[in-house]
Amino acid sequence: MSAQNIPFISQYKPEKQKFWVERLNKVMPDKNFILAEKIDIKSRSNYQYAVVANPAIDELKTFSNLQWVQSLWAGVENLIQPARELGFNILRLVDPQLSNTMTESVLAWSLYLQKKMPSYLKQQSDKVWNELEISSVADTTVGILGLGQLGENSANRLLANGFNVMGWSRSPKNIPGVISYSGDSGFIELAKQSDIVVVLLPLTADTHQIINAKFIANLPDGASIINFARGAIVNDTDLIEALDEGKLYQAVLDTFIEEPLPQQNLYWTHEKVTLLPHIAASTNPQTAAIIVANNMKSIEENGGFSGVAEALIDLKKGY
Ligand code: NAP
Image (cartoon, rainbow, N blue to C red; front, side, top):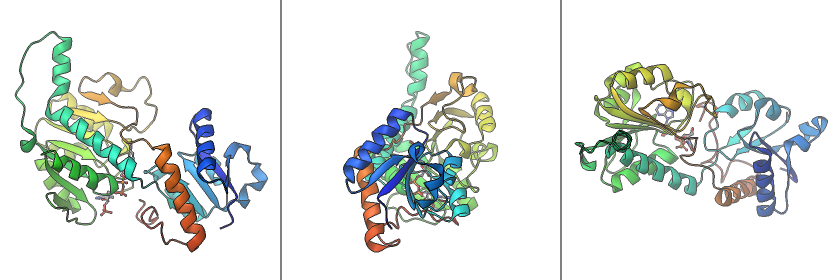
């Protein structure tokens, strides 16, 4: 790979793009990262490597000969189709720091639900002094959908804090202390036992709207859902209906089909929804830039996939 000039393609705000270009150039002084907008359209076919953070797909496609696209995000669903069309490899961000941040978020918001904090906030605003009955942590089962980089670490964090933990993934897993399910029947088995469901699946054709009325119907009454993955994994109409009917206690939502969430969206004002602006596990510039540098070095030195296997997206599976 001859990679001296490397485009940085993103829909971040201009100051954040500038920050990232400076950061990447600092960590890799032998490279020259350039904002995509500064690269002449005609010369864009000369680039083989790009670093991206939620890029506009039309802009990405103008770099028609890319071989490697390194994402600064862990979720890369928007890159799958262009990669299939143009034939480039995708490296997602696999960062222990990001994973650790996600485990903190999963633990924090699971405790928020287990301790009925939304109800106490409501009581405060109504000036109500009333002790609520809560289940102990040991009697609270958290079902994690997706046991990958983020799901497995979150499962272990919850386990270490006394929760009863189960998980679901495509291939069966053996994580000590965590009851693991796979397949359609396993999906429903997990639903039946979960007081709190944490969604940490990638968005693919198989996971699109997998959290729907059928799944929710199998949850115990009063269960809650935390979606830290992607908005389109949840059927919004079904979720709102289940919240309104009292089937579910709460939803903690960090990701949405359209982001930022439009002002008129019902979630903003729904009393059973806690809304977060896609912050469950943000990319850490210090650690992520070093990971990008190490991946590029591996590709340059090994000329292929060795050293980047963990980050490499399987385009057939779509994650
Ligand atoms: P990952 O390592 O690829 O793990 C994905 C997990 O989901 C794997 O266990 C996989 O099963 C399972 N899975 C995929 N498709 C499935 C299916 N059809 N049925 C059952 N299980 C399925 O991904 P990750 O790094 O943990 O990240 C997960 C997602 O979190 C990302 O895709 C991204 O959307 C989201 N994310 C959100 C934030 C945020 O701030 N909100 C930050 C980072 C990431 P196998 O193990 O059998 O393959």
